Length: 290
Image 1 (cartoon, rainbow, N blue to C red):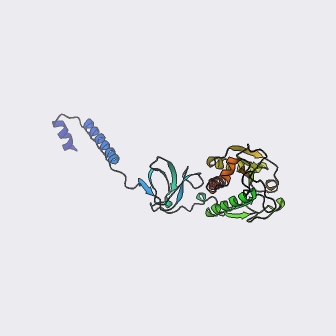
Image 2: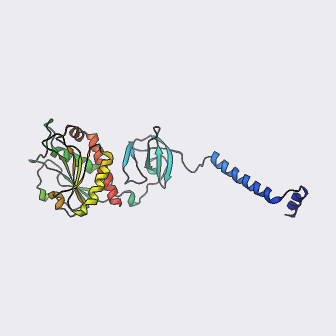
Image 3: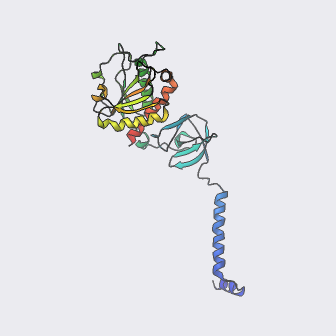
């Protein structure tokens, strides 16, 4: 230390400013190096190793934005634990779990990430058998009993893929009395399509009866609306027997009007039904995650 002080003294240089400047220069050099040289520990891109979906947030219960395919490449823009925010060449963004990609990330077994696992969902496809429900004014082959059963079966498969257990009040074209449309479960969903003499009315309506069912109805309504292009007729309280007689959270969904030509075109379209069904699944995930 004495030699250093002597060196500064001989040259008539004050040591404190020089040392301070040297430290500052070293810090700036480290910052510049970190900016220039990428952090090899954090990936910049990823590739899908299987078909999946991008979501609005970093968890499985967030709504799906759009489907992605095996082999799709993305730029990583953010990360939260095992979830990555990515964007494609069109600057479309979304979140994906790392275990669906080439990043060799182990799947999280946290039950919060699979909120439907072991939940019992009761699906009630409206009408059936001698009770055909609403019918189309332009297509004799389109009846409510047929569409509700198709929707329920498609929804059942999607829910089972999420780990849920599904019970159906009917799984074929048969008449079931309203009083018999009951099963034990965690939630009850009755599926219908509306109709009126006029072709004007159209859209989605979510009904509940008991006050205790209102939060469930609002959650499903919000989630379906985020995906569906049906007009919104809101959440309503109604004295329908199937939701009055159940003690569990229950709703009756009117998923469009068969009597409206535009709604009917959507209702009979398998791809569009899938969009609505995925909205129902997302709503259930949100409901059971809260």
